[in-house]
Image (cartoon, rainbow over all chains, first blue to last red):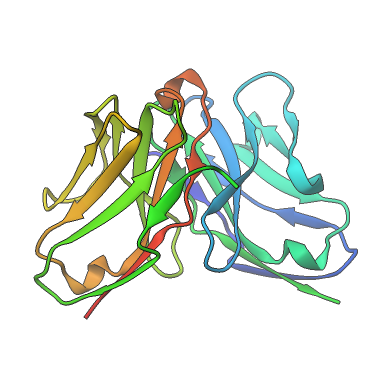
Length: 112
Length: 115
């Protein structure tokens, strides 16, 4: 069965530091890949998505993600974190079944 | 701002009751999906509607049902509520069926508490 793994439940970084959130998926082919962010009490906001083509994808708020087929990974990165980036981050895949499969999320805490 | 709205924002019910949650999609979005997000978990797919017909269902029992209307609004109905139904319910709309590489836009959710 298809699945998404986000190995880090909770990450803490200092403001201005770089960030990498990990995401691995299990699927026989290349799925469509997404990163969403959820602030407390809010719905999900799309940060970026990968369907095909260039494996380095740029998103909103200065985020980027790189698809690595050999590692079945789609890690999210940001070179310099801002306090407002504190939130829950979800990686999701669509295996052409018209539904999104989400990971369990990574909670990002940012210290000043 | 995704243009997707949900009502109510919060709801408290007791076990065995029935509940209806509502979602209003962006104009022109023919697809709506519903997700359940339990505390500390990622959202789980409940079902999807495309042009008022169910178009895929996740691992949820039949007491979870839905409707989609021509005016881009939709409903999620849950009968015989159980304590484990307590969760944030999210709806998401997109212009077409996902396999055509459209993005889903999420509403803010309805938080349901079952006592």
